[in-house]
Image (cartoon, rainbow, N blue to C red; front, top):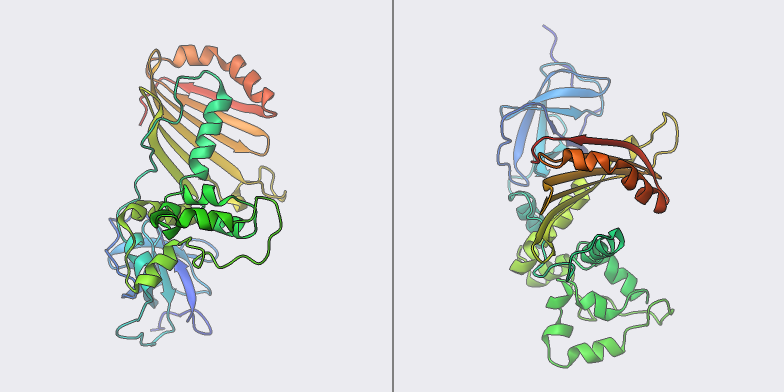
Length: 348
């Protein structure tokens, strides 16, 4: 009997991203834990169905294998799509892998529950608005000040492209010594270069009292974060892994709203085969409106085209009648309404 073939030349060092294939809940792996994958069958050119600890996954293998092959794995992290290091056949992994404080921190955040949605203590707008621009600006400012892009904002500040006051207003910045220490903010602000003005080489962000999530963890030499930053850093990791931002709060007094924004995979966003891929964005708004009741609006923007899908159990007819008005508003923004659909179904 012929033994199952392993990937040629040894697969050591390759990384496998496992995609659930109708399997039960994934085991609670811990970073550094060993596991074994058994190849069940081939699905496509380089994609195989694997069984890992009783759960079925699909994964791309670096070389051709045959059913029955056993692949030693080392768990690296991840929730819905766990990531493993594919070890050489017969290799022995360290009994007790050593991870840095930052690595232990990230592992604990990734292995926890799904991140909570971003939120705001106050309504984004002081009064109701029927105009799109104030709502769009409020959402834009909320995302920019949420802390999701804090590290890139630190870089922009160090290059003189972002004011220090805006940086210190973000959640991470509010824990800066420049804010917590009396009188420190003024002295730090006086040394910041004005936006857009080239400055002398800026001090390192940590030296200027601007902490990052990694710097905070490494400075304490322990896998811990200030509790207020835990859900925010989880959101940052979720965005890096899935391209998704979720927000739940009050748009204006008395008007709750849920909003989810997702950037799609650029490799699959091109409308024409062989054409250059364009980044596509999906936006989902869920509201409870005074006259229409529950409404969910799903929008997909790719290039200059917009696709709109509305769900409303009570207001579908009125929303459908407003298609021409919606098309005009989208055209005024320099875009084109490519598709429009309304359903009278229940919102999720």
